[in-house]
Length: 311
Image 1 (cartoon, rainbow, N blue to C red):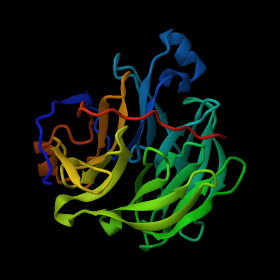
Image 2 (cartoon, one colour; image 1 turned 180 degrees about the horizontal axis):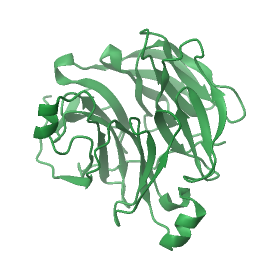
Image 3 (tube, rainbow, N blue to C red; image 1 turned 30 degrees about the vertical axis):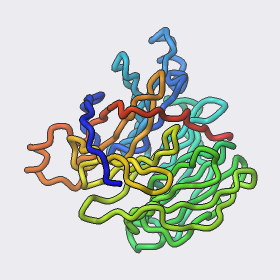
Image 4 (cartoon, one colour; image 1 turned 120 degrees about the vertical axis):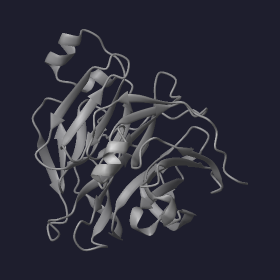
């Protein structure tokens, strides 16, 4: 079956030019992650979208209804930020895992990885339905020196997949028996058998291959029907694959470098797409005013409520 190219309206949500916008995650109780003074100032509680700008570097929480935004600068490149079940968030800053009680609170570093590769850093991350953190690194020096880590509260990060170059998007299928995973350097999305009770990975096999001419697979999310969405960095498009690996949708977006995506909104029908300005020439940036912006579209399928880190 050939891919569909439906006409979908794409809305500019935040025109801020992120250097490397990444890791969007919908927060149903979004403003609760802000510091206490900010919550009192706003005098309301609503949902929000959290993302990071690796290049600034900052964690960004945006109320897409009011446009109210808060930023938390970090001490190093921040690859991801995920909510915690008890409030606050967990983030990957450089090669360290950090806990914050809220967006404005003090940082507590709880783990560090890859001391023998100081040029590496954390990149994308996601939490499984039992609240474990799965966080990957990117090898900015020697290819193959990064990894995907599994982390349980109170324990050190454990290597789940070694010999990675660019650990990127990942998410689970509807019954959490399969992990979809991207090491961007392979130009593939892989499917990995998953034991939810034990939090262990099993057999790994290719799910779909991405032609380098179409862009590099970056962020990933799975919708409520089991469709696998992939952002094509450098390809100016996002795609949806059916659970059997068939290409279902190919949607061009008005940015060359879409980086990641996440469903949100009150009905989880909005698909948010982050993007990056990095790697674009001055001429490309002049022709692409939305580079680095946060975009939104309604593709006709629903998403799922994100998981949070238990810790």
